[in-house]
Length: 237
Length: 377
Image (cartoon, rainbow over all chains, first blue to last red; front, side, top):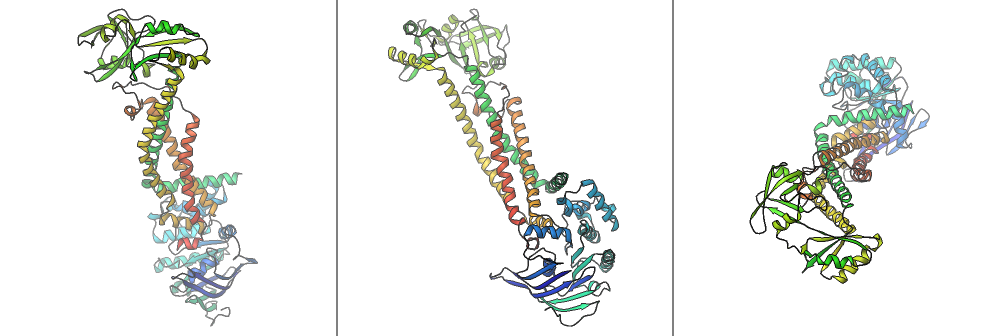
């Protein structure tokens, strides 16, 4: 379980362009559940997602992963936690151009020192799960939007993390591909993954997959709903 | 151990793929970098091989040479001086040498006439250096002509062409008999070019030189070590000129490399952000950048030094022969004996590979230590 307590995030503090992205946000992410952060652009979903996934540090507040307080951990430990615990799917996919789909999938595992042939085999197996085996040697820029996203999902899974974090995963997909994406998330959940999605797409937040929907606005949590139903103002805030 | 090896291997694989993605930019950098190292290594290989060759040749040179000077300029020396110098204690022998330069206006070349101590060519014949043979298209048996001091033509039969091994000193050489040379140059019978001394004790060179100057104030004794020092200074000075000429090119490269190495493009920053976000540690990113810098600079170093070696020892230093070699318009096309000092290679390595690799790492280190979220934003 991940608990975020009183999270605040200020960018460019004490500068003329200071921006308060999050104010006193408290949420709980339960294991083996799908949690959806819902809200308009600028509501703080991406920032919160980054903090939950150890990609950024909060200005105030604490993040606790299981029993471990992560906010004060040095960067090296955060990286290790990020690598072992979280698989990220970015809005822009953030795949590295010029490399093949297979190489992109393998990248997160490079620093682990796994035998190259075994890693390659494993990456191809994961790609096969998403019907990408035939595109393994294709360069990223040759892939369609749907294929690129599936490569991003395969990359997120290469180190077999218990948490999958996706930021606006359907923003660049049409309805059909968005539904395909949700079907993949369902499969991952059935395989025991904990999933956190940030989205303002109804296909995502109205999905029956969502066990918890956290609605955000202007950097604050407006409400938290369980099992698809909104539950009024959040108790954490 | 295996894990670390695989980690290095995977990161090197990624680095190479990364470099190949920016083929144009990295290719241009590699070409310019290689060119600079090529020039630098060529100058170093050339001057040091030349110095070494000259030093080896000069080992055979006389221990002390005595010249006569008038108003500070060199003059032929009277043969009578030889007997007076021989009387100095410690001098074993004094031998007059007859030699001189000749400018060939038709071929715009300078030749050096020398009367050999032993086995001079018979009167009416000459032995010529390979450079002259090539220039004048002369083979043994041919007749070769020169204009005498009085404007009258003199012709000689070519007896032999000197072997090419010792081209540095013999390419422009003409060996001739004494009587023929006196007739050609007009040097009177009681004068000679200089005197060559043999001295019993090496430690007495300076003392004997001093005694000669006192005895014959219009002479100038030259000790072999002084010649070696002069050669050394001349070659160093000349290589210095070339280095100055190329330093502007090197400076342009440094600015280019500095810009390339220290400034990260938005794409590179984003890439580092992605790598960090997917679980690469800062040390992994730095290792990748280290390999990137090392691959480029080491490739340029190896290519540049190999090309420099080929240029100097196989291609006869074709690019800067006019700057580095003799004053004569007849340039010997000699091949230097390959000689590479690992100290010099280490110096080139330290001046090029090390700073480049470090400058590649520093900006990446700054980005790599930031939160991936801030980098991606």
